[in-house]
Amino acid sequence: MIAVRVLVFVVGVALCLVVIDSAVRTFVVPRGTVSTLTRAVFRTSRMFFGAIARPSRSYELRDRVMALYAPFTLLVLPGVWLVLLFAGFTGIFWAVLGESWSVSIRLSGSSLLTLGFDRPASLTGELIAFVEAALGLGTVALLISYLPAIYGNFSRREAMVTQLSVRAGTPPSAVELLERGARSGYLATLDGLFERWEAWFVELEETHQSMGSLAFFRSPNSGRSWITAAGALLDSAALRYAVLDIPFTPQAATCLRAGFLALRAIADVFDQPVDHDPAPDEPISITRDEFDEVCARLARAGAPLKGDRDEAWRTFAGWRVNYDQALLGLAALVMAPYAPWSSDRSLRIYRPRLVRRSPRSAGPPMA
Image (tube, rainbow, N blue to C red; front, side, top):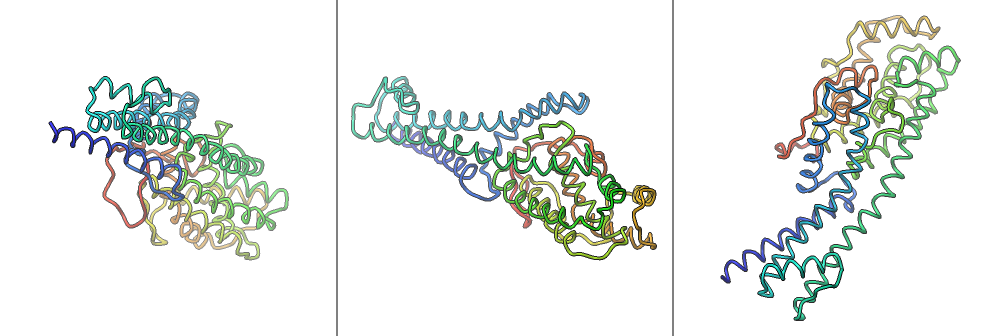
């Protein structure tokens, strides 16, 4: 009997440590590392929402369903923690105090929820009850403090996405942004736009690694998404260097680098396959015909184009290969709305896995 009580005590302590680890990694540690418990909760929830938002359903329905995914799961996660804490401390009370299971259940529930309708008779039991109450209150406090931070980051992200729609339309398109620039005469003054988006990509990398659920918070406008906006902006910067015959400035290049580094880092968090050192001549999802069609549209809009179309294609493909795989994978992951050159070719359907793939040197996977 003593061996059984010791085993139950160890299991109870282990459950509590799993909860503490999950809470700290999810809400406290400022990097893209997530516990197995958090991963399992998010992926189980994703399977539930994915079953409703099947690809055969209309996008409007899928968008409404997936808009609830991240907020719902964030609220479920503390509930899972509380249930595990309740189970863990029930076992601890039973093992330490020698009470019956029914008494241990009442003690654990009263302590966890700070109801106070039942309390241990010994000092040891009271100390255990204090620890359980502190952990229960702490998990709720962590969620309360986490939500303002995540919604603040969401608002800043979406403000830039909305601003881009003024120039690139909804859904965002790189060719539309450059066409409007050509017709309005501001092609040579895009450096300010690329500078702002460089800062946006830097913040995106930090927030979407440390707050992984933020990637699944959808834009208020169903036709917009942070990932399709990122793709349109990066394509605009790549086309600016490859196609437009305007003086060289470095802002688009630094924006491109900040962008593809951010998308790769976020893809790593979600265990999306990404090549971190692609060759410039590796295949991309954009075809030469699509590229030539964009060049023709820009020419009709009056944009100054470079004469060597083959060299322009090689330059564009050399930039695009750096973010092509990550862009399409993330667009599929978040079920992004239609947008040219990104979600329109994200045919691979994301299948959440409860078992982590073997680790890669690129970075840690995420729920």
